[in-house]
Image (cartoon, rainbow, N blue to C red):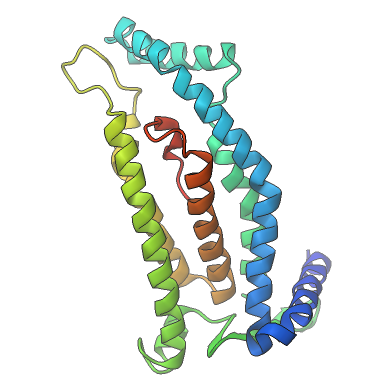
Length: 255
């Protein structure tokens, strides 16, 4: 693991050297943004496949509604029948999770790289690199201890929080519109919800705001990855699902 981290640290440093003429002291931060964009480009085929899968699931909605009516009093049979329908049509109900899952290793690499004082037995020089005044190895709590919320470091985090809030609000409003266009059957309507789906859909619109907590507690380098990836996800989803304004399958959370 140590050897692998040394190679990864060298990659980040090489990207930073390439970007130094444009970004100077913030070149490493720019390298992290570029690295994130490369990861998202690699994952993009999975995102497109996920969109196709969600379109396929949207086409199954009438048949699923029939199953809900047929098994209204037996949730276990309903769940089994829905899963069997997905298998018959070769549609995976979990395909929307794949893009997020494949990004986790990249996030944890950055988290580990900027959380350790040494890499491969040598001092981790990357910890001294900054985004404007804020060290990439620091956290929001560190920034608050160096000038407070409106100090030089604190303002960097305020800018990230503002960007995350804008993206989260965009995702929240879009998800609410999608849920309004595809409301779950209400109790007493004769249909039966998939078990647990009601609680999930109530919580779903708020998930994007969890990114604010992540940005506040992880090293700034990892926070940059999260902010860049989340912004990319919002734009990508708006493009991939532009012809599915009311699809319940487009409720996948942004990462």
